[in-house]
Length: 114
Length: 115
Image (cartoon, rainbow over all chains, first blue to last red; front, top):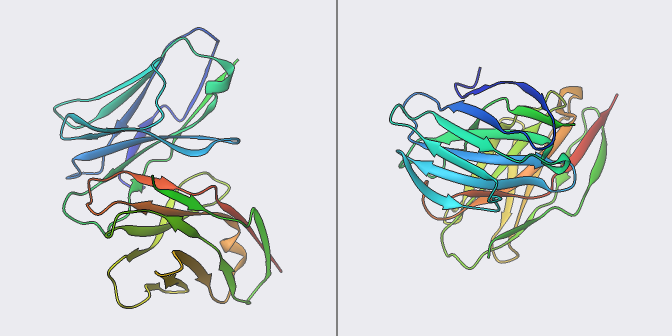
């Protein structure tokens, strides 16, 4: 157990639907990062939150949104789902003030859009 | 913009032999960090090793070492004494100068260890 918890582990849904992916960072980590891993795009950075505030944005579609709550857990909302959104979605967290520390990743949520 | 290149989509190595996985990067930042991650078939991402751009010595962690050549902008991962459990995808990654900066990943190299 890495300390980063992602739920659910698997999700199957239909096109056009909306889903919410949840992430609880490792205890004490204030930063949360979301990544999308698909076969043809590799690991793509989506968005970063630090202590509740959006810190950086990557190639995140307008249909996707995220937030980090006061208890530091984060949710990634994916709406109007398309077949191409099928991917493994990772959440990662890191402690502040320690550049040499790699991210700690959750086990991921595998989303399948049918 | 920052970019990571891994030119080896797939590699094979004999068990107990050493293997080098290539990584080159591009950045205009004078300060940055380089990472390697392992992703076995089970899917989890495992942090292996870190090299800071100002570190004088190459990083080592057990059987993993990083061959850092700053002028050539390369950060190759060397795995010594390969084991069957080393079969996995390996990703090179880079972060900006602070721990708050996002990490970008290369496309990965698939390593297969042959008994």
